[in-house]
Length: 336
Image (cartoon, helix red, strand yellow):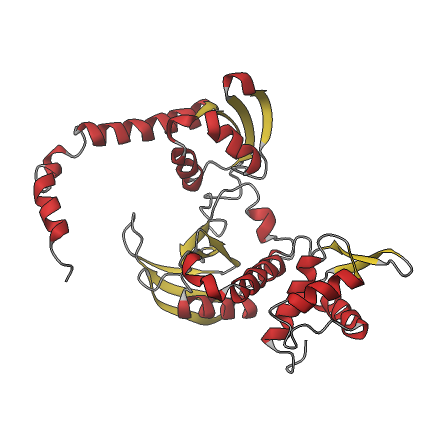
């Protein structure tokens, strides 16, 4: 796409991709374009030459082919294939598509609520620059759960998960197979630098394949770590939700019992911290049946939560915690 292409033109390409997810004749496309908020000449139809130009540009730059499903006067058009495993292009297309919808509905913007998405600011820019050049990065990192450390690593890739960016790659020095993830958060990542030293990015390494057996961005200690076969029982409405929104891409239904309101699912994945957090989200509507060590870890987590609420955990510390009445009074005070 040349420099003369405007942001608005890109939006038009995405609009065409979106409407042609289902087959439409050229006349139908013209009618939809008349009503489209991206049409600077409202009410004017899309001419055939412009349509064919957009169609070619979409294929050249997004890898999306718009095929002719029927020939002749009643020709219809439909998107044949998307960018496949190119998640970045998929994400861009999806993001711009949502943006188009928001622009066309600005009159009701106060009734459209969005999540805050941290930009990660300069941290993300710096890390992406290092990735492009295959250069090492170093930084001081203050983890919420561990002591502050100085890290030197090979930034293999970045991943966005639950509105947070992470950089993932092997640590430099020591065991080079140790791959870690770090949040691109200016409050935790300080003194970030791109070093002069380059590294060789493995030709056979695929970030998507590497994370295929994981939930989220939590990584496992070594390449030798193997994913586990996990069996989970889900009750009532949670089992219906999981059928439409799988916990992980490996999800399979082993046994379904609609009359009793439960389903048994199997998974092949790494049981990282993110996995346990996902299972905990569903409370007593989900139970790990197998393997024994994963079930035991869940029982340990649940017991810890029970002890916390029963007051048998951190007793000495909790004696210093203000009472509910005092806390309610603090809530009524104006925020400083």
